Length: 300
Length: 233
Image (tube, rainbow over all chains, first blue to last red; front, side):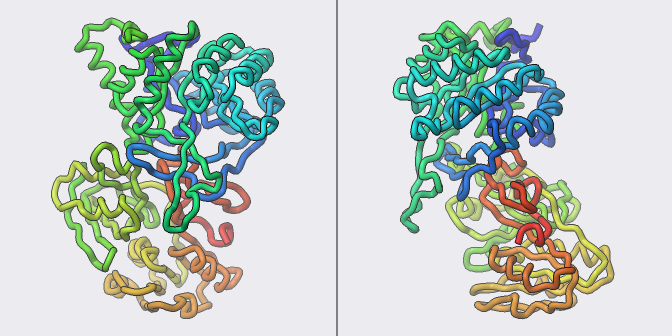
């Protein structure tokens, strides 16, 4: 039997490594390096109801062991996604997660309605987007807002729903509990940390939006702590992420309570990182005499 | 890990790097390169265009612009675990059997050399290089060895010297220079521009390098870096 195999929300996954949304396009861009079917799953580029061109100005900026991004959810919109990308993504040969964001509740619901009847495994609800009606504060900042967006989304979708939490929330555990109470089937965390960079020579913010999201190994220990806290507080499964760059990191997230993990920024640095991680997980199981890697979930 | 065959400074902040690689890039394609650094710092690779290539060697010429390229410049020859690279990436130049102008500015001249070599290998038509530099020149002798004519300008506008009779041209350099080239040549001329943009992944996955081309957002790394001039400017 395969020691890496797991069941996540009723979906059988070959291993716990999922390519994170926004770092793996629509699943085909890394084919020169590895076949995406070796992964446990792929989370699509974040999709919104309307097509988006993305943000102006600089969109990525390096930091020590990390990366700031302000891409701005450039995507073809839900209709374009369903027509032009979803059919091909279904053929990737691993669990398919569709990541959905929105500027208003109506947009989330409109997109979820269009996704009804579409075949994919899990809907990942990105609630880190600014809510236009709350003056641009993200949906995921306050527990009551999380409860509202998740419960409304659940009402309008028959897909398994994993809510992607933002670490910028006023109280992360409270938002996680709110997601669970609103009917979320799972949560994934963490999204990027709100951060910034300043071009001191030109005396201006690097990003047109001033703030951007920090990801990469730099955030890993904080993300790990957050996954641990949330896992302890919830009954629903947790998918962990935040700067995972090796099998060892993935194992740490699982020990902290994550059933599976998402990897992102590290792929930019080393396109073969997911392959190495999966090999590393297998080796760990052999060394530790584990019949199932899932046995380590939440042992810390 | 890469085998560095030659690595030398050729102008004040410009370096030439020859590595063993059998990727057989096409002119206009690029690689992502970087010094691995301590503690994953710097984190990303930098896109460097191919200056020349043959079966098992690829040559890059790059300018130090920040910390990442500075660290790259410190890599010695020999087997170098610290040099990480992948490629070739992106879409390169397409040639036609026409007398062609190759117009470069600064380090933008770099990919044009390989382009001219390949053009001359496949077609008998004339290749004229127009090379503009703000200060120190570099690579000029190399261009002289493969071109029918090389025009060099320092400190001015290289576009002032371009013969307007060309119907096929290739340009790489600062955006204002490329835009001036696109506007200078007749409407019927077919031009290719090679764009430079800050990149995240280099393979099309992250959408960091998107630009509006032909009315829609396109990725410089995957849909380019070479685009039709009329679709960009």
